[in-house]
Each structure stands twice: as structure tokens, then as C-alpha cells.
Picture 1: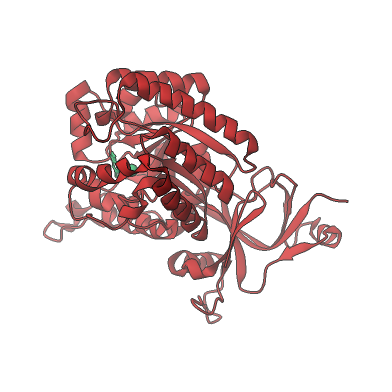
Picture 2 (picture 1 turned 180 degrees about the vertical axis):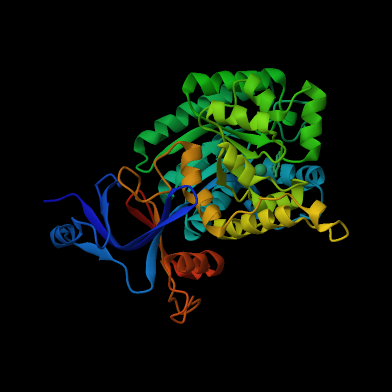
Amino acid sequence: MTTERYFKGDVFHTPTDGQLEFLEDALIQVDSSGIITKVTKKGDNDYETDCQLAEEVIALAKGQCFLPGFVDLHVHAPQWPQAGVALDEPLNVWLDACTFPLEAKYADLTFAQTVYEDLVMQLLARGTTTVLYFATIHLEASLLLAKICVEKGQRGLVGKVVMDDPNANPDFYRDQSTDSALKETEQFIQSVQQLAETAHQGVYPVVTPRFVPSCTDAGLAGLGALAQRYDVHVQTHCSEGQWEHDFVQARFGKTDTEVLKDFGLLKEKAVMAHSNFISSTDGAHFIEAGAAVAHCPISNAYFANSVIPIRRLKAQGVTIGLGTDISGGFSPSLYDNIKQAVMSSRMLEDGVDAALDQMDRGVPDSRISVIDSFSLATKGGGEALKLPIGVLKEGYAFDVQVIDSCHKDNPIPDFGVFTSPEARLQKILYLATMQNIRQVWVQGKKVHEK
Ligand code: GUN
Ligand code: FE
């Protein structure tokens, strides 16, 4: 008896950065651990034979297709109740007045469970199969988030947040000491690694200083040492806005990137949220270290005081993926962020102040296409996390969203006019809503159906 399973339908993905590959009526073979073992498409030599040999094929209906599951590189799980709130305030007011009092509530595990279960389901229902999460400073509640990801079938990478500087953080929401922050981080790493033994789709601990301004030098150094010793992922906010950029310069006389590098935090499997203010020298440090940028375009429109030059950084060779930054970004949908990344890049290219001469208004060669942006949300995310996800090819996890362009509640018709693969994908990326996401699979297991 075969342990392989077979899925059949049109596939859109970007195995090469920004380049759409369309596989017509592809046959995808998946092994018992949820890994793709072979993909053939109409016209390939083996295709007809493989189709004849395949048993119990799950075949998509007309108007349906497979997209890779999205990879969200930056979510603050505890901020889900705050989505959409107080965004008219600057970052420091938003954090002090709303976010820290909210995050402090996660000392209560019942509250944490209610919010975290809802969030994981909401993200899965929007096609997001892998998420890099900030939790809170609380060890227990952070561990609970990791457990909920495992239970709901999402691939979660979770960090217990460190905010150990008593002079930088409110007394009601900070680590009690540098020592306790480091001990609890180590305990968290060990507990999640133990949990991972039972997680089919993987669950990963992440070393998570909130950002340089909230941590002491000893805290940052200790976290860097833990990240190296356990060889785990790292995440933080890096050069997000003018204030942070200037604050770190004033404290260290260096950029965020240089400081993170010096403390051993800029490394393989490190994902730096935002990074709007990084220079090309900083970009070279990212490349050398194997670190990546989590671009959060909706959040950036509120808090980053700038548009990050994605196209320039990509051309330099920096690895970049997309993040929602719930709740600096109000939307839990990477579809919304894919669109915003395109729109922000267009505004960077053209400029925004019509009082300036057209030649002085923008930054030439900054625009990205919606296919580039889709590539960031899939392949880019997988590369950032150094996991075989985001592309539907042999050796990669079968993480997919089944999109239905004919759903009665939100049909996306082409009227027989815009039928090329590129136009079909463009229409899905711009017009699909939750209604069109009929199924979501993570590593060969169905985790959402509507
Ligand atoms: N910088 C430090 N903490 C945060 C946060 O929670 N959200 C955002 N957008 N920036 C931060
Ligand atoms: Fe953030």
C-alpha cells in the first residue's frame, strides 16, 4: 500500500525570485510526513503515467488553484485585540498608552488562551501557514502560544519577549532583572524544543529582544550568547523609524544593525522587522550574517517615517519577506500587505509632494510588481526562516491555500479576457478575500476549510 498522497490542480508559485511559474493541472505527490516528493505538470514526460498510477487523487474543481501558504514574518500575537486601535498616535504613545498595558494582561493564561486561539485560526483562514510570533515577557503564556500553534496545525516560531532595562520600560511590564530574562529565555528555548518533538509541522523557539532601546547591554549580550549556543532563530525590531534610529545612534554611536551584530544577534536565521533605515553597509552585514528583513508595509505607513527601498535591497542581495506586524499593521492579511508593498514602492518611486519638481520628487527604480510582492510573502519568507517552505517543489513542505475564483460570495471572473497565468494570479492577489480561501493545508494536513 502506498503512503503517498496525490493532489491535482493549477499551481502558481515563484521558485525564482519574482518570477511566476505556472504549472497547469499539476500532479503533486506528498509523502506521509507532508513533504512534496514529486511535481509534474501537463506536458511533462512522466505526467500521463504518474496520473494513471496515482490513487485517491484530491483534484481541484474548475476555477480553483493552489498557492503556497503565506509566511508572515512579523506578528505580535498579544496585540491582536488592539488591531486598528490608536493608530493616529505616534509609536511611543501607542506603545506606552495601549500596547504595554494590553501585553501586561497576558500574565492571565485564560485571557492568553482566548486571544491566541482566535488569532491562530484567523491567520490560517487567511492562508497564512507559517508565522514568526512575538509573544509577551511572560514565560507561561509564550509557551501556551507555541502549544496552540502545534494544536491548530500552524507552523509557529515563537519568542518570549525580553525587555530588561528598568529605566526604559514601565514597572508593570518588564522583566524583573537581566538575569531572570536570560534564565527564562533559556527555559523557554528548552521547553519549545521539547514540544517540537510532538509537532508534525515544526515549532521553533526564537530569541526575542523587543528592540535595542528596551534592553540593557548585558541583556543583549546574554541573548546573543543563547542564540549562538542553541543555534535558534532571532527576531527583533531594527531601525524601524527615525526615533529608534537616532536613539541607538546616540546610545552606541552605531546603527541598529551594527549593534545587533556586535551582540551576536545578527546571524543566520535572524529576522529583523522593518529595517527601514538600513544603509548599504548595513545591508552587506545582513548578507554576510545570513540575516533577513521582515518588510511590514502597512505598519510602516503609520510608524516608520519612510518607505523602505525593497528593490534596492533585493538587488544588493538582502533576503526579504513580508510581515503584517499585527497590530502596528491593522490587517491580519498578507494579501493586504502584498498590495500595500506594491503601492508603497510606487509612492517611493514617484514621490508624494506635488509641490516638488517631478525630477526631485521620488527615488527612481523603486517600484516592485505584485508578483515580486507575492514572492516576498512565500519564497522570501521561507528563505528568511531557512525552512523548506514557500515554494511547491520536491523536498518542500506541502503548505498550500486552495483558492476558488468562482466562489459565489466573491467571484473573480475574467470574462474570458484576462486568462494568462500572470493575469489570473494578479487578479487573485488584488481581489481575493477570505471567501475565496476554501482550504488551507500545512505539511500535508488540512487545517482550515470553509
Ligand atoms: N518597537 C518596539 N516594540 C514595537 C511594537 O510592538 N510594534 C512596533 N511597530 N514597533 C515596536
Ligand atoms: Fe512589530
